[in-house]
Length: 127
Image 1 (tube, rainbow, N blue to C red):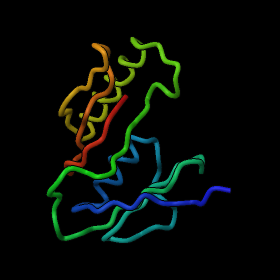
Image 2 (tube, helix red, strand yellow):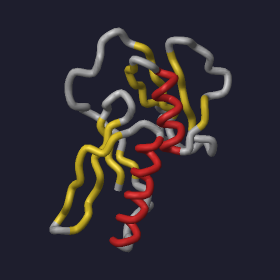
Image 3 (tube, helix red, strand yellow):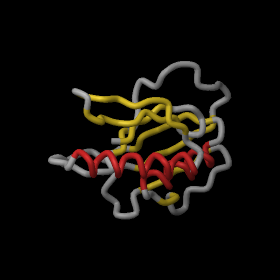
Image 4 (cartoon, one colour):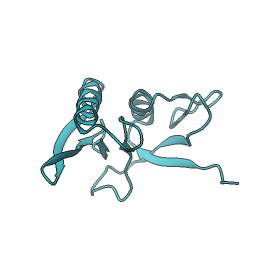
């Protein structure tokens, strides 16, 4: 049996990041979690890990060593055109929610993924 785990994240504004990532992932606030210096979101279906955000005084100073990859087209095999369309649509939605697109990765001339930053500058990818 797998061990249940939580992804812990540092944040300047934990509630801002919790709202952003809840939107990005389709998560909801963790019931009963109420802390002015922290926030937690959970998969409403109970399948994915919880993600917590804790206020820290220092800012982000380097590239993430761990980041989230959103796989909006699901698992392979994919239709390459549909996968790219879904990734670009998700990226546009996330830009409206406060993210920025910082790059695009191609593999053999084909769309691979978009590189983005969340509202506090943490890198993540959308594929």
